[in-house]
Amino acid sequence: MKKAVVYMLVMAFVFSIVSVAFARTIDEERDAVRSYLKVIDAKIIKYRKAGNTAKMKVLQADKRATLARWEKLKAQMAATPAPPPVMAPVQPPPPPMVSKPAPVKSAGLFGMGMKTVISGSYISTGYGKINGAFAGRADLMLDDMLKIGSLMGLPADSLKYRVGVGLVYGTGYANLLMKAIPAYADVVINLPAAMMGGIETYVGGGIPFTLYGTGATMGPTGLDLYAGMKKDLGLGMGLGKTCFELGYYIVRSGGADVKRSVKGITLSIGQELVI
Image (cartoon, rainbow, N blue to C red; front, side, top):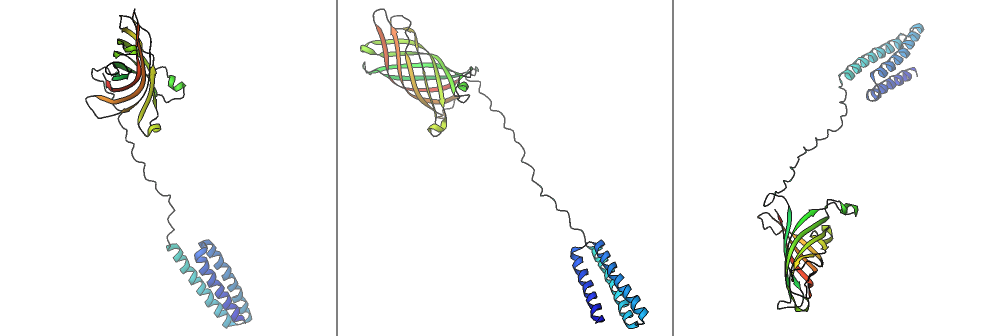
C-alpha cells in the first residue's frame, strides 16, 4: 500500500512537471518542486526513525531523480528562446503626391485673352426670294462677375453674358427689305452636361436694340431667344468649340415712312475664338 502511495506521488510529480512545462513559469515550477521535496524529506525522516532502511533508500533515490529532472527542466527552459513580439503589420507608404501643373490659359489670337463668339444665322420670315433674311453677329463672352448665378443656386460658371453687335439683311414683314445693325446684351445659362448625356447645352436670350437701320434711324428693340449645344470639332488654329443654335428672332427698324421688322425661326452656327 505504501509503495502504491509512493508511485502515485511520483506519477503526480511527473505529470505536474510535464504540464507545467507547457503552462507554468520557471518560478511556479520551482515552488512545485520544493513542495514535493518537503513531502519526500518528511517521509525519509519518518522511515529513518522507524528503522525502515529499504523505504528510506527508495525515497532518497526518488529525491535524487527529482532534483536531476528539475535541473534538466531548468536548462531546457533557459535554452528555449522567447517568442518574438507580435508586430503590427507595416503599412506601405502612401504613393507620392504628383502635383499637376495648372493649365496655362491661352492669351489668344491678339494676346488679349478675351473669349468671343462669331456666328451667322438664317431667319425664316416667309417673305422674299429666300423666304427670310441673313444675320451675323460678334459677341464677347463675359463671366458672371456679380455672382448672380450662385445666388440663384446655379454652379459658379453656369451664368454668362453675351455682349456684341451684328448685321441683319433680308426681306421681312409685308415683303419689305430691311437692313439693321443691332446691339446685343444676352444672358446665357449653361445647363449641366448630365441632362443631355454629356453634351454641353445652353439656353439664352436678350433684347437687341437697333443702332442703325433702314431710314437712318435708331431703334426700336426686338427679341432673341435660343437653345444651343457646343462641340469641339478639333479645328485647331486657336479655335474653341463650335456652337449650334435653334431659336426665335425679332429685329425692328423704324423708318420715317414705315416701320420694318424681321422675325421668325432662326438656325445659327457660331465659333468660339479667343482674341
